[in-house]
Length: 134
Length: 281
Length: 124
Figure 1 (cartoon, each protein chain N blue to C red):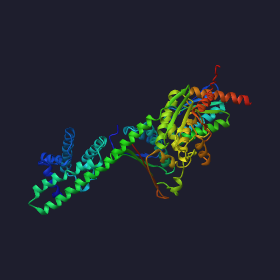
Figure 2: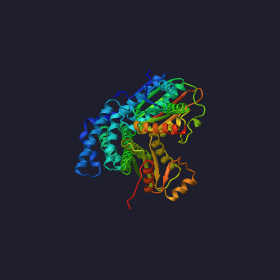
Figure 3: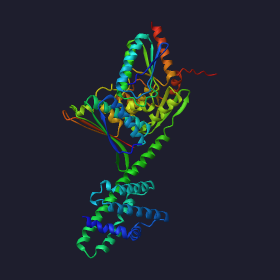
Figure 4: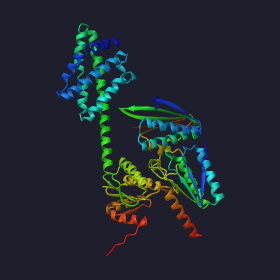
């Protein structure tokens, strides 16, 4: 049982992607999310961790238990100092399709969580914040 | 600033009993059980308020973590009242009614120093207002949570998955097909598919009033999930008007078999799973 | 780094994925399978993912790749045992695993591979 409310994991290698999945699983279990919600959150974390490593040149995942109006949730922030995303609109464009999963997979990840925030600009790195509420 | 609250703290410390009496007197008449509950909640809130002020929490910064015990207490208050079916108004009234006895107490203590009394009353009023505001917003959230849970339970009840035959499941969809409904159906149906090892699921949409692009998307999500797991499905209950809408909107059903009636769907399902029906004359 | 073992059962290669794979492990599996199909002339590949609680886009692409590679080498691939939560998540993610055949369990998977073998031998 995690006693801390927040922490940070490095995302500098493939092993770190696995570690981030395992960490998010433990956190979701602490929050007692349903199995489907857990699966979605861990999968989203896997996608975003990989993005941070592959496209962002490495970075960090910060996790934190949050609360809003008496409702508990898990927030994850993926941050890197990489090249950044040039066209945010394009990166987030996608209806639900049977896509090949190429590229950043951001629209897909967005659908897996409740709150999704993307902050990025060329040369200014990327920051993705996701939250899953109980 | 601190002086404004020194008097308040003093009042909370020394006159707790009297304040609670006056506070409860302000509240609408209630039965004995409710009065006892009110009393318990009142003394707990006063105690938490006193402890927080004593620990140095700054009432001007109610959002800070120092006020967490009071926040938590108010959240609990809202949730229990929301669960009992009380209104947001009742809950705010409970908190706001605390003003009168505390005002009276401050007046007693600072009556001789009007320059100190006015700011103390103002600060007190602001603090109580913040408490009431916090209660109101958490009440809202608590109500929404309860409604959401009830809706989920209702959805679960109205999503029965039936085993029609060896290897053939059916689920009747009733009502508007939205995203949370779809989630529920997918979870229930997929779970049963795994448990029973059924290869075919019949989704009957006779009870779905309209099918537009969005509804079709939800249906197709379910179909895709079923196929991903290695089973297949048939959509039945397609009324002529719905068939027309589907063609008109150019919706691509991606090769899913469709039938007008559940009976036709069952017939097709049996055929697909290798059953042959014969009838004795 | 774990290496996923590949078992051979007659004309079928059997792979059971039970660990949370690193990306490299998945790529190595792909290479190993391609090599094994070519070497053994297997006509079927079964990948059991019943123990996988997470299938993200990387693993999804790996399954699609293996399917494609096997097809070129005249083998049929079937992925079995997908968990409901995984299926729901893949759909939401937008991955439909085009071209990947799936079956509910090992038994059904073997049936599918047998049928595919029969059909292709008829075609010859």
